[in-house]
Image (cartoon, one colour):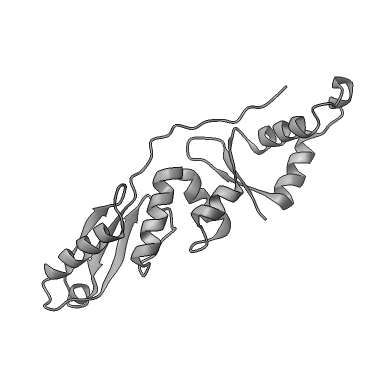
Length: 180
């Protein structure tokens, strides 16, 4: 039996941030705005931040922060810079929830597009489904009489105990990544 990679076509979240003015916040006002980042670049985000700061109830406001975010799954924080925010947003738009799952594997601040593309193996029904297909790929010439003696569960435990990481998908299945 050959397991097949599960393709998830879940609705993708649009990454967006709520940028707020620290001067207004410190003066007792909550002032800021939501910025959708699906098609935005750094200049677009800087324009939104500058406009928000100009409209601040506190004159000469200069400092801003990310007070809230959607679709980033913890990949950015309140002090993240524009370049970091845009890089994460672009990767999330391109790769969807799998990129956020990669952030869970490597940690906030370490998830890069290049690292993701190197580590991502795909989305599978389960760890065992991945292990079974990998075994079949590596040992295509294994006679059927011997296959029944292969313990795919043990093979899977070994793989995911050392070389691979799996993160559960909201829609079912697991995202599989190399740990190396």
